[in-house]
Length: 344
Ligand code: NAD
Ligand code: WQD
Image 1 (cartoon, helix red, strand yellow):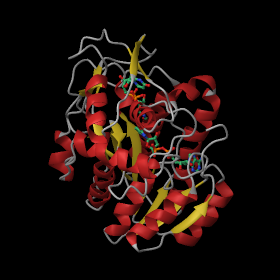
Image 2: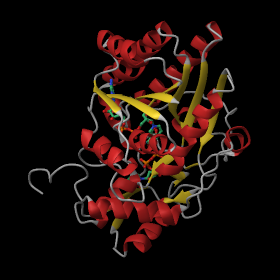
Image 3: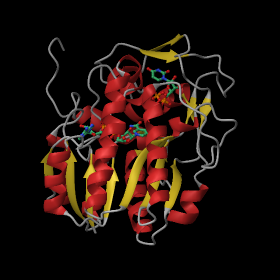
């Protein structure tokens, strides 16, 4: 297949592009590199032994996007990763998030429709479930609203995709709700490269282990969970990438509109993660218990049965592999794709 990938230089995008190339698909990437570097794609093509077509462009730039799609279409499928994703930042600069994520999606859908490329897979998030009524979470659970603008952009985009497909049955749309992607490709050549101080647990833990950060703050130890700390469904980024391959194969069946959870179905607490990472890295991860982080929920994990039944997809890698591969990436690339920041 010929696959158009927005945001393909980023963390999940780069791992997905690699799996697409390995499976023999042709890939066209558009990314404005606002949160990534072209180096990730260079490494991807080296690992795959195959090339991609890359455009450094912003999906909100309709003229440019039109030029790219005119030149490259038809696509058998589009995978739409491009978005801003920092929860805290979205609270301080909400308009930028709505403009980039929701606005960018409008432009993308308009241009794709004009070229009759109506098969799409979209990166949604478990954040749309808000405070779940129970765990594990199924796709038919309510999506009552989010605690931050980032989450709202995902919910709004889900609604846009739903309405567009309803109005024009030629669209085939699969929304993938990711749980907590972590880890890296087993080569250690590509991985997550957060700008500044990481917001998410695993990149923070890895930077403590490598000595870039002093100590982890554990946000709350009084939740009603196994040990009082927050529980999440961590999923290896390569399993997540493979979920996208199953999703584009599903598009061939013309499924209309579908939603799938991509998670493992298992939950791990913050303290369990620290222990698993210490074992994988043979390093200590010093931590201190701090107050709860605003907007956090106690526990969240997926019921992944629908993706297993309808996509034939199941996460294969466990927490050991996730920590091992993250440590391999972090220790080979202590500063990600770049150089040490000034002062380090
Ligand atoms: P990322 O920031 O590494 O990748 C996103 C990519 O999109 C980056 O390369 C960035 O440069 C690009 N981009 C952003 N705005 C753009 C624009 N206007 N035009 C062109 N390119 C643009 O993030 P990621 O972790 O790989 O996430 C990929 C997708 O998955 C995002 O939509 C994110 O919201 C979603 N998601 C991520 C997580 C997670 O925990 N990482 C969880 C659930 C959902
Ligand atoms: C995991 C657990 C924290 C950092 C976020 C987004 C969500 C999705 C995935 C995109 C929680 C605890 C964390 C730290 C800690 N992204 N923690 N100390 O909050 O489940 O989900 O990323 O769609 O939208 O909200 O992930 O990695 O931030 O936190 O104790 O320094 O680790 O309280 O229990 P979260 P996370």
